[in-house]
Length: 232
Length: 286
Image (cartoon, rainbow over all chains, first blue to last red; front, side, top):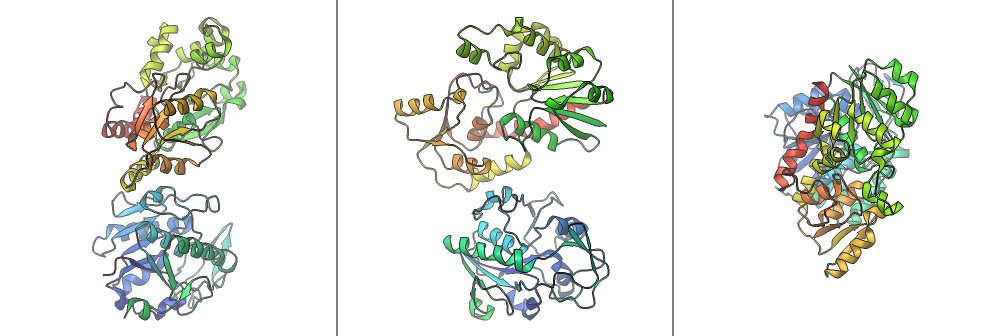
């Protein structure tokens, strides 16, 4: 196992191109509602997390079950709420977005964590805190349809009115299901700039970040393939 | 049950020691209680009367008019007070009073002192920051010993205690510097601390303007702390944080919690601090 490399798995459609079985010997970080696919695939990442308050609250029962299921092999969970009082879960305390600009550097920063602005960016920062020197991004397409068919806006959040038959934003169609609550993705005006900022901070800290997503709008990272980077 | 909390400021306004302790206490409020926050400057008789059957907790109350303090003292309202400094004194410190005016503090015989002591005496609980602070009050106002007195000490949130412990764990290398607080407040005695460092040949760094979490990281990577306040500091968080981070600490005798039993080892400090919020709410619920 290469313990210096972490594969951060965004949930964009291109993650569907990844051979999950080939990743079993590598450290991986899964996010948000991807657990719905893990159950069907009987495949689980090394780490799992969610860094969006609305999604934390919307999925709290499922996240709690995931933590309590000690057979799934996930080593550590990272959430914004303390769902279960166990060393298997680390609560992350986010600083207000945009107020600070430092790159989290170690596990103490979990208690005053600079919000990277997106789930993938925060998972990457967690990886850096855990000591990973190389971060491989997959499924980080950053190419969202902002309002998926079936969703409706309520205040600042979106609610999925019915499970969509086709979801252009994610790697499996029922990633979002009826009743799920989430934020408007804001891929172009929010996610892309936050990734660009992280790429600069990571490079300055000597962290090698490489985007192996097969289809992505991001241009701020070195591009490559999983096969090449992992020697598959 | 509703608990009305009154303070001059809250931590979102100013992250001082009193405000952080108040916040850490409120974070641990039992589920059966509902907190309603009020600013001391906005307290008036109509608000008090509309909530006279509810419980009240006072943090720093310097902004409350004397008439309002008397209204509480004369009432049957169930209220408790966390006294962070010496509000009977017009300078909130007898030493500072003498330093500023050139005459010893005699505020216990002045109207302000009498009203504050009456307000404290009629409270259901007085929570002090240290034994020394409590004793100094009791020397001036012996009848306060008949009230329910509790030494609470500074209270830390679970988050900050965890952060400090983790900082200690992950900090592998320390530099040779002693941290001096670069506060503009004369009572923090920045110049005196610098003089002490020079006289004793200690490498030092004056630190100011950092966010709390960055200041703690700076502290964690340093050899020591020099803190020599010019007036009584009842239970300074900075000193406790430095102790938990394993620093060599240079203090004078105005740091009032330093001889208490709990302030002995990192383990005893941690164990004690973890208990304080629960202790507080236990007394409020009695």
